[in-house]
Amino acid sequence: MVLDDEPAVLELLCDFLALEGFETLGYANPSQFPCMERTDCPAPPGSACCSAVVTDLAMPEISGLDLLRHLRAIGCRCPAFAVVSGQLTDTVRCDIEAMGVATFDKPGVFPALTNWLRDVRTELPSDWALSEWPPPGTDAPPTIRGGWPTA
Image 1 (cartoon, helix red, strand yellow):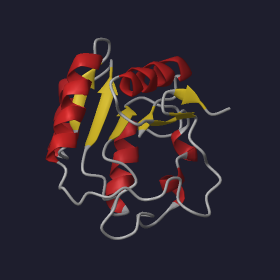
Image 2 (tube, one colour; image 1 turned 60 degrees about the horizontal axis):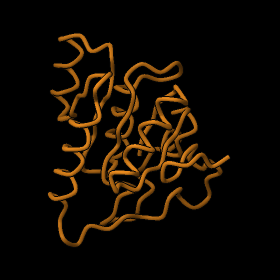
Image 3 (spheres, helix red, strand yellow; image 1 turned 30 degrees about the vertical axis):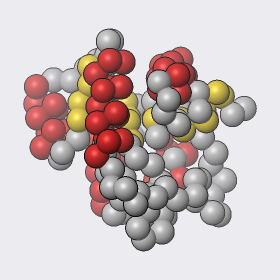
């Protein structure tokens, strides 16, 4: 799952990750991300909506850090989270990493992010299951699916 309010950056990240063999779902507006209006994780027990959430830090409606706090608060079972930004101060980086969230700097994020996602994939348990996405009953399809715009 990739969230970035800049359409060109979102498309670039999703395209790159798709070319590297990762299935990607991208959201340009975090407030339209189906989990934002939930008070619980929509994935059935024993599964998660994705293997990793990668979000921009600075977005207009909600920061990437606040998005991750919300996901944690609703019990999101996604095993890995990352923040990508060109504006990470040492203080913000420490706050994010204290949550167990990986950080990546723009520009030049691609090699490090790809290696991190490969590590995430290899560390998943053998019985790892992804749930249906978007959750049933939601009308918020991703902006990008698999590197290609959905609209």
